[in-house]
Image 1: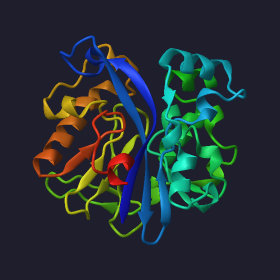
Image 2: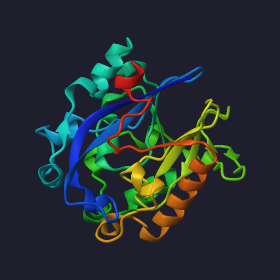
Image 3: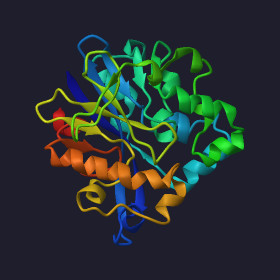
Length: 273
């Protein structure tokens, strides 16, 4: 099973905001999404990263325009999802599965491009998002205009997936394809319903921990940020226990990869080729 991650955009933030005791120097963060070549499911996307639909489309509402103006993401044209698919001889219609780790704009902005795909996501988080008023969803960082109109009809909720139990410091979770190749690991804290992906069958097990932290250094040096970073967390009390779990996984010899960490990894497109 081949695993490739691409960088859809760059976003800058002061290091002190994302690393306890960091400097005020700006850090240029990646906005990753994944393309997995599964032996049975075929090409599978993990999120979509930022796309023009979220940042430059004339169809954007006022709140989404303000969001873009505040964060100022810089789209990475070469690694947008459509040209990356093209590099592998794929079109959007070839994608039958998109795994949606959580519902923030930098993870769902391209969902409407994939008209043939089912969406594996937290059905519980979707129920809560549907029940909220638009202004309440904005407080949770959810822009419902980015969801395809038939998202619910194509939703394949993780609650129905078989569960795999933890093994020591190797986390368990929902077995997405029933073969143990990709396990959805609950990662509460950053966003409602967020889960990461455990690839336990690799020579060095990989846990894609999405937005559990912004910088890997925050985990390895036990420097998870506090205030004001906790203000934008869905469940601030869950962040440190999840970080501790990730540190234990690292201690087993596993690899943790984050959506926004700027350091290249062997799974990134530029490195993997």
